[in-house]
Length: 548
Image: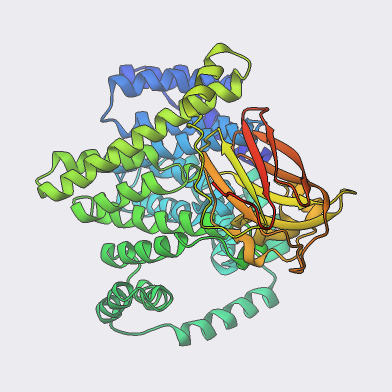
């Protein structure tokens, strides 16, 4: 983050030094730059919010708004705050590019953000494209891009190419810096990087690898591969569709239709539940989300009037997890569909997902109340509104002996929580996991959100009980009175434990209920806390007279 902060300070210097009094918008920008230079990026963003209100169709206004929110992302100490600022920054920058794809400030600042945010956010490729567009713009329209900003674009491109593991292009960008500004501090830094990364033997090896790779690249028919890729997608063979569409993209990277269908394909893969791959790559699904949306964003850039594309991107922007930061963009897409001459069915679908989007926004407001004002009367109202009615379940279909585990999840977060339900013996020894959420179960020792379950179970024999995440509401599970090896346990005292962990609010609760397993029917009820406000465990022995 420190590097990102230094880069932003560099930009602020040129903003404040290069702008003269002129239009009201320029004065807004100048005042915002002064606030940023004074170490108050929040005030700078506030100023630019007002500028956007007065100049909603100005790409520059949105670009500078995105810049100042980006500064806050670069300086925030809290991870969640940094993520929210980052999302807001890209929303403003995306709007700027949508208004004017040839806006130097929009391309520069979005490129700056794309290259410097963590790679897992999926913005690197887009950032590189933005900076390449800016350089191409400087060639097409000499004088439109300042010398300072052009120099910085090459510096950022060097960083982007290096992160993208294209050392040949990175070295080319650094060489261009030396050519544009010999002897400058930026040129000296570029020269130092070239000494480290651009040795002749390194470049020779990179060229050989690139040549070998190019032999495998398709030479032909992008349209044909697109057609085959779409057919594979329709047949739900997403792995084959991805392979074909990636080949098509290598032949025609700017084709809106190819980017669209590749985005659809990656998105479908991201819809799969957690499995054992999560232990190897905990960012697997989030990476697919960002990658899919990246392709859809690129498709919209080239085909903004494609109604089907805008409808689908809008739906996915709302359905994807909150950290994708595409909720507001999804709303814009769906509102665009409603204003268009789309079919009634398309408009009906857009209206439905707009309702879902506003439900999510309402939920976010409640989560903020419960998190930031947890002891307030308003927080009590949130918990009361979220808590569902407690209902009893007909258990006549079950054969005794068994143990009923009946509980309520009383809080809802941006994502479904991680839950662990397990049994411990008289001495606290681990007996069996009854259920554990998919992420925690499959990620095993890399998970930290269910510490009590992890310590007790040591991840033993969880394959059959690891399932899809459950969320707010009333839930019932059954323990068949066996241990994790499938053997019937002896009579005695046992403890049922239920552990829940929410994210991003970090709400957590562990609740335990003791129960005697023997010849008599027993029941224990525990009512405590807010996350699991009700837990009932009831033992039904063999030959029990009545099972309700």
